[in-house]
Amino acid sequence: MIRRIRVVVLGACMAACGLAQAQSQQLSQQPPQSQQPSGQQQQPPQLQQPQQQPQAFAAARARGELVVGVPYLAPPPAAGAKIRTPDGLDAAMADRLGQSLGLPVRLVQLPREQAAAALAAGQVDLALADGASGQPDGVAAQGTGYAARPKAVIRSDTSLRRPADVRGRSVCVAEAATASKALAESWGAVVRTYRVPSDALVAVREGSCDIGLVDDAVWEPLVRFPEWKKFSSTLAADGAKAERVWLLPAGDAASRAWLGQEMRAWDRAGAWKQMTAKWARDVAFDVYLDQEVPDCHG
Image (cartoon, rainbow, N blue to C red; front, side, top):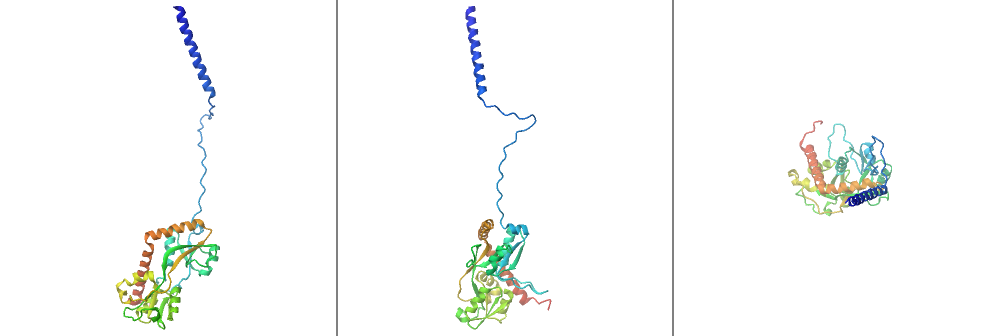
């Protein structure tokens, strides 16, 4: 009996010794853990900072204003003279772009042939022009989606119907409307230029000019006003439409990408319909002031 007990106890001891030896071997095979000094927390691994992307129109942001070149700026009005709406949508387009960038806008007169040099020198951030043909490789063009051609504003009781009927007749246009002036001259018309569109249209309404010319994009919203129904006759369409484009440095990839996205956003938002309607409303009001409201400075 005692012998059996000894055998059982001996077997249990041998089993316990074998288990302890196995655990010791397992611990010896594990890699040693680093010890942190007392009171010091383990620091997380350092993440690589993402590279900062270049900003669109960085020079304009640094300057604090967006400088936009336009083909023509009407002379400033004399002291005390009435403020009138300029020809075309250049000013409205530049203002809207400045609002998107959160920057005030300054317009400078910049003939098309001087745009490349002004952009390269940083004198302007971008420029507006009719089409992109003829620009050097260093200049990139971004279409706006706004394309127009001149359209006639004539009294409804006129017999004028075709461009050929205009030969020798008087056509009144704004000084900035170079496409309108060139088209009227091609008809053989006598062209008279005025500082702003409303002055040219007043001449038509008062009978001192046979025809006025405005962009076809603003013609319809203009003649929709009741006071313009008597002047809603026009001529058959003539001349090609020209798209207004933005010109900017070809190497400024960030600005080019941003501007392309912005023009698509304008199109989705109906920006051109809004701007043409506002232009027509403003010019109609200018004409009303000139014809109906007495000049307090006279």
